[in-house]
Length: 233
Ligand SMILES: O=C(O)c1ccccc1N[C@@H]1O[C@H](COP(=O)(O)O)[C@@H](O)[C@H]1O
Picture 1: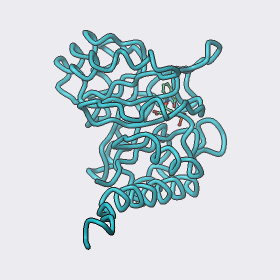
Picture 2: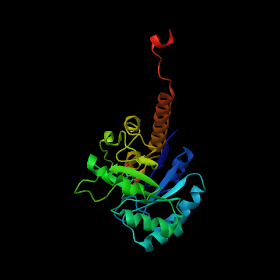
Picture 3: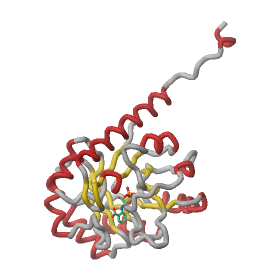
Picture 4: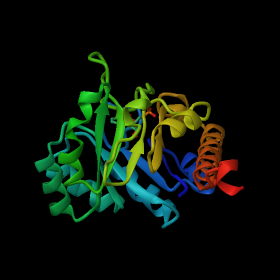
């Protein structure tokens, strides 16, 4: 089954190269001025050219209007639009139709009740991303480096590819994958030395840890159920 790995909030050519070289499946670019990972529209074409088909390009926005999304699509040519704000299911469907790109909707999670919206968003989005719900005084709706209780996702049937984010790092991604049955993991703060400053070493460590945890998960799933001695005698 494997795992999809997304490194988000990349801002420089060397750190993007580190993510691509280690085999990140998705690379994310943030266009949200309040974020320390914010990239201007003008910065995007060069990063887009650097990716050159080696990973899926994800454009992250927060309650962006159509003009901003159009500029982003023109500058980055993203493979996926990540909507990380308070976009409604109707807005998600409208963006998907207007821009003709797959959409990943981020859903903030703190309690089981937060998952009640899953069917409505699964009906209109191509992918879902479960992220920690921000605290009331957080400036950012994501990218806060804070995990949530992954057990809330255990047994959840999403009917769409689902990623997990929120405070993941090389040290906890194996635990997260042993609890939450997701198709992918997404990290930003956990591969940084400071907000907005990605660490190539931490990117490599995260990808290695996630791949190894996914392999262990797959091996455990493939193991035949041990036959009881009484059944074989
Ligand atoms: O990274 C940001 O600055 C950001 C800003 C606004 C919305 C989302 C943002 N990041 C996304 O949040 C999750 C979790 O990040 P972290 O690993 O906890 O730092 C991830 O999807 C980031 O792409």
